[in-house]
Image 1: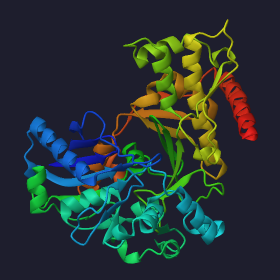
Image 2 (image 1 turned 30 degrees about the horizontal axis):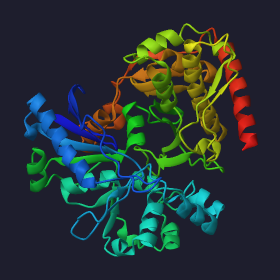
Image 3 (image 1 turned 90 degrees about the vertical axis):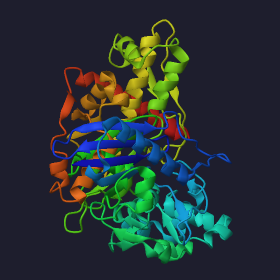
Image 4 (image 1 turned 180 degrees about the horizontal axis):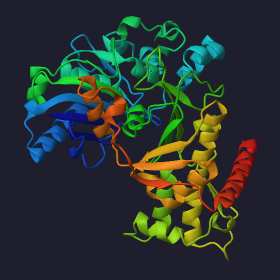
Length: 496
């Protein structure tokens, strides 16, 4: 018996096949190898064609089946992870009305800001735990205001994962977790946020049927089975946004547990068991995958835009062609902790929500030409990005989150011992690196949805650390370095 999982990203589609009884991953396929096109007709806009996602799901599935030779009839469930905050609009025949406005599109910022003012901060923060912001609901309102002919034809508004499930099952539905990421869930009343819909003039009938995050979400139709090469009747039994899904894949399910990723941007996602609000809306609370009314689980998401992109830029500017990140890490390790006083502020990838939407840029501080070499620049870049993560975690601690263990995947910035040790030493916590991916996590969660596993805890109990970072003898030096870095940042913010 096998389980299949999909990760619907903005760069590519990943598909994973898992053997249910052992939890072993048979294969993971990605398509396309190069990034999918993002349509940007104006500055700040970002759109993709949902049907392209669906076509790429087909190709990834075909490659998975071709390699593994697994009989499609032995695949019993499907799980879906997807890029969050996107918007897909379909008509009564379930045809897409316009390209999806995806997560990194900023056109609806002012829409959300205006609603925050009109509705009031107190109501938004007590019911949405956030500002309406540039989330899915605000994007639908933008369409209503600027493309009324499209809006008039909307039958249902969907998230990207809802759309893929629709193509699989011919059933338009969403989840409470999804509604919370769309800023359409009223945490206080445990229902659809009708007050925001009323403010936007959006009919509540556009929201699809609500199903459980883990459980029956429909079965594969004959047309979808023929298209994908899977068996008709295969159950779709799990769906969640990529960040909650990634946290679940790392077995982050309980209060005090934190997942982190360090790609182009960085994400910290921690679990609490009651609503937590940041009055400055620097973090985003969402319903976690294992949330219930009687046993709440809320994920607090914090994003650092200027993360891995800083290190990548440094590599492009300083390293000779063909130099690997492993070689850069070895060179950076020859510089001492805190890089002989050289400090880097990494926020150079646009406005930062953790800085209350200030765009401070990236800055190199205390550079001395006779002291600092390439090694210092590389190390200072890694330390600066790590310090930005720590700065974000402090915000989460301030609103009530405890931090003891941070779990990360075996990829991106956390492969750097310098980066990981910096975070571990300053925060005084363990960082556990696990061999886990989103598509595999979605596959395993689908096994819970069909009852093969009794719980998400059981499905992920065999996910064990492959490496652990713990604070060591240089902790005082790291903490002193962070204090200086934070002082630098506060001076910059005071000038803005």
